[in-house]
Length: 142
Image (cartoon, rainbow, N blue to C red; front, side, top):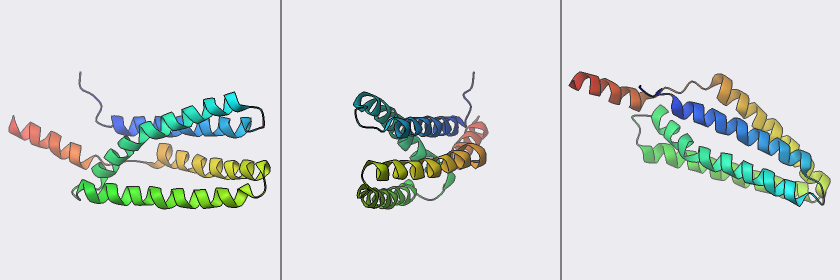
């Protein structure tokens, strides 16, 4: 039985949805005295986000082929770094408002994350150029 060549897309979409649900749960339990629940949801956010990172880099390399992987991964990691810096700065600005500021920040983050889930699940149609080319070469060699 042959594996579906679009499996990285399915894993990426599942990780995105799982991370969104964990982030939403974290926002809902973000109250003083809820450490166990907060730790639980932080674990799942980290699990889904960390598991999706290498697959995302592979998808970026696939869709930008024949550009070298170093270029696509470099651009992707730079975007990650700049967006992380922006979110850290925004969270620090919201922290001046106390716990209520963090809750507003998390809801803003959930809205943006929800939009990205809709885009990744509903719109993403990654073209697996490198995999398709390798499969065509294998067929021609036989």
